[in-house]
Amino acid sequence: MHKHIKRDDRICIVLMLKRGHTYIEIAKELGFHRTTISREIKRNSYDKIYKVAKANSLAKLRRISSKINKRIIENNSKLRKDIHRYLKKDFSPEQISGVFGFTSHMAIYRYINRSAPQMKKYLRRQGKKRRKYGTKANLSRYQANKRSIHSRPIYDYTKGHWEGDTIVGKERSLRIITYVDRFSGYLIAGYSTAKADDIYLHAKNNFKSKSCLTITYDNGSEFALHKMIERDTGSLVYFADKGKPQQRGANENVNGLLRQYFPKGSSFATITDRDVQRAVRILNNRPRKRLNYLTPRQVFKSASQELI
Image (cartoon, rainbow, N blue to C red; front, side):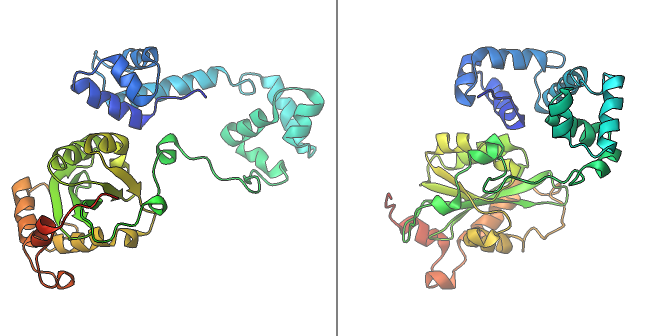
């Protein structure tokens, strides 16, 4: 199946280029041919510099231009008039295509949606989409590669199973990335941006010396590099269902405690990672009722890691 390079892939490309990886290594990581990666970088670089935002923009413009040139109906005034005439006679796009062979019925539907919405009133369903019974909506490659929380194993009384999320500042582009160990409530956090590569680097650096068997995230796009996080931490990454923060209850609870020091709606432009670590030390050394008034640090340090 033919695959197109998407934004998440471009994030990986930029990150790996910065680290000196070759086109062959990048292609192997992302599952593309090396010539695809080479062509992507050459065509979508600006001033010989490859950046995610500019590459997305250039690729989008090229795709739009290509589609416009191939739009048979828009580029043929007689064909447009014929299609309009038969639509007004209550012919369906399938009937127009089948009887007269002008073009495919899907091309007619796309033309109506794109360039002639006023013709929808002549369609039986007036342009409303209906998914075939028993089928599911197509997922993007990023969504399809995500491991659901429902396949996560049960792991009572073991440490090394983390829940991750970000706390958003007033600027939204500035975050505090948090990880909470489900067993002990032990917190790891850091000052970060909302960029996926910064989230990836934080996980890679912080789980070098700590037990990390699983990580459960919410569905934010900042976790787009979850496959690289798995590779470099040795963990399995799972994702909670959309709109169900209770599935990551330990993380949500500790994030609420952290908000005491970084209130909702406050600016993160005035804080530093040193401020974040100060709050982390306080919370990790604060006794918890659910731990029989031991601290998360005490429980995390004394708990044994039992592999599942």
